[in-house]
View (spheres, rainbow, N blue to C red):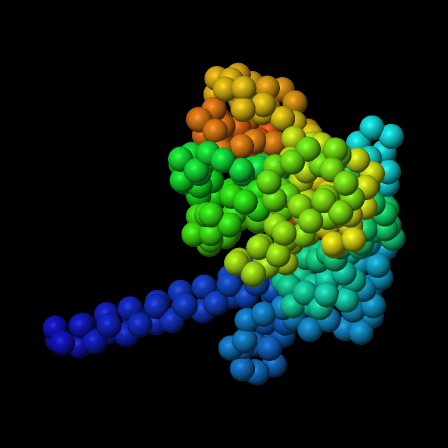
Length: 345
């Protein structure tokens, strides 16, 4: 008698478990598919109700309706690209990519998505018709004001004792900078330069012997840039794009000569003036007050900038800026964050 009761209890338990599993399957199906009607129809028809979970197939009419909705919504989400231009004060200003819905990719993703979910909009960038290189030989002081990215440009001709702590701060904060190297320094410090490269930073040209470029002959200007460019290629394997004239000294010939060597001349938006040995606190306050989209922040490997760097980075991050290399900031590419999503269908 006891065994019979035990068997009955065991059967009841198994039945209850099966019922619970069936209910769970229905709930999961509803969550994933948003449509229980197909499940009920299958049960009534005596068909196998064990579904491969995923979005239900849409009819051809529903597919057309979905596609048309995406096309209509794409028009409202389109952002026009901005051409590079020459500004009276800032000279060459990079362009900024526009943004358009990738209709075909969005449609493909939407067909795979549960019907109760928003349309998963996907985007593609649209390059401007006019880029920096189309502006001719022009100096560059900043990135596009619509791009919330800033850069640290670190001019190196001396100050080896501060480079390691600067690199440590950049690594800790996960920030990449652009180091403009004096050629005579690079020739004597190839190992340190390789260390900077290995840390993922961008290296560029800062002439050979820190001259006053605008007071040099054309041939001497060419040699100053070419010698350092040769070192960057031969010693570090770098295909460089930028030239930063020492002390910001240049003339029209400087910019043209750099362009002849495939380089664009870059200056700065904000100067730490760290060579005057200001306090770290005053540098941070200055940068915080002057930060703006596209800012190129000039610094050197000095004690002042070593001590101010973490604060400058914190200020930029607190204001919602991305921090990238000069190449990244001056490119027309949009900043990384793009919100994707939309209405359900």
